[in-house]
Length: 157
Image (tube, rainbow, N blue to C red):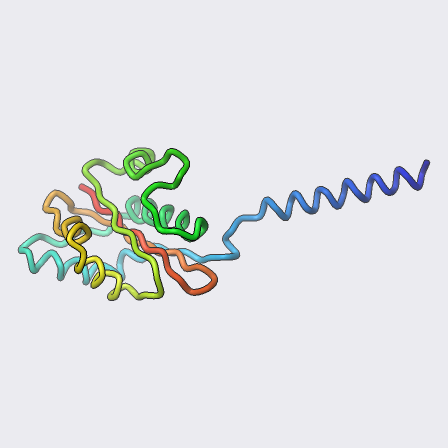
């Protein structure tokens, strides 16, 4: 009887270890950071070519961008929709981001300059950055363990 009880306790302990290991976050598989300041010169130059004022970096928008970048790296795909009934509009509203707002996404092994170059060569992304209604932005990326970066730029009033 004592031997059976000991086996049951060991089994229960192992089950707890397995459950706790499963609860660990994915943070070990990626790193993320807000990088709004590194994008400031690029955005300012882009807007200056259209005679628009520079945008101000905003911590709340940077947080929204970072949350999206982290979602994308953990999902292993680029998407405006998290799949949890949290599309862009819902995410912005829940994050306290005022409408109108826009989001540019990218992924790949690229630095800040390359991601802005890519966005400038895409009509929709370019239009977002040149929208005269916007005066604030947040930029972030999350880097997967294999070196791929998932970028998010959030723009708003």
